[in-house]
Length: 483
Image (cartoon, rainbow, N blue to C red; front, side):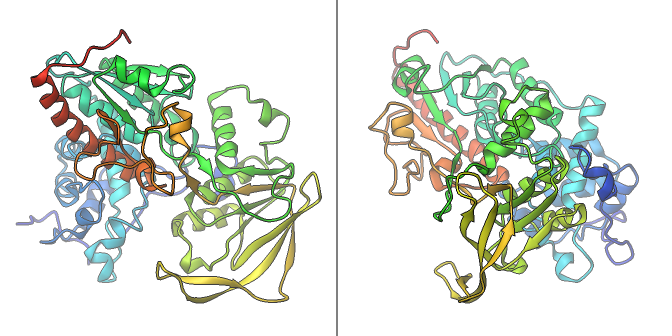
């Protein structure tokens, strides 16, 4: 039964942590919102209605115990709130920052439906775990009793890091292989600092390293070792590479200088934030300073590009999207933040071609309208005849989503099964691929998704791998070469 600290949603207004002024935050890559301070976080947690069927948890991919740790927070029992939050998520402070709460937990909050405004779940989650780090409540990773078996994890993104942690806790020797020079995947190089400051990611990685997980950074599977060689070194292999192949726009001029992929652009910017020397940034090809920038796309990656360009000092920043605001896939909060910072959205517009020949000077776009629903149920955009228009552009960023890479070729393993979309085929129950002892998790199984699903996938595949490895140990481990 709820106590007197809860059900305050009628008399207590919804309040998010204050955002820094748009003019200030557009000048740096710091996170835009300050953290709650007690008792504000406790007050906001106390707005929870403690409903019998917690739709917030139902719609959370991790099924976090949200009402329970909200209640503990409202009662000032922050250490217990952290422990409960951490029980279902390996990265609660990261989810609190970058999960699309408006589409998941907060978007399905019962009091949101009643018109009182959702509980600010993400901001409270961020507050709980940041406090835990400051107070020293975040426990070191303690490996379980040694099982005498080793696991290779290919990919140090959220799915790979999550699986590595669970497997290490279960007593396995874990080696993480990643082609980048820092672990974290999109958390490190894809998501800008104004949404996720990099020390937040790096302290998680350092905790895993201190727990005995071995990281092989700058290691490209297929070049430094084939997948088959990793299979011989380890008892099991997990492929958790994510999807990085940028989707192209099939129009005239798509190969012109100045037309770039979103992830290339964001990676260069994040590397600069680390203090790296990035030649493509220094020579201007991946730097928006002084340029008229057009971003094509309506998802969260497009919002990241738009807001990064503003911080780099672009002359103008426009986002071109073929549907209207109500039908865009990205977060409405991100759109609002971008508009506050000076971005312009060109709704119901799609590129027809890029002007300028070898070097882009503009985007020729068609005016669109929404027609009949497509197979997904969304109204399909269709061009309005004779309504073309031209947007000036020195840089065009394609943020149209990602497809799976050709992993069989990349890894030198033609027998790795894939679907007709290029995603890795797995058994729905065991999450094993067509290769014995090789599992797969995350985006590569079903195409692009969000970080919170990747964390869930890493947790789930670690459980199935653990069961398989235990059964394999009873029949005798395969002979391995030294890692």
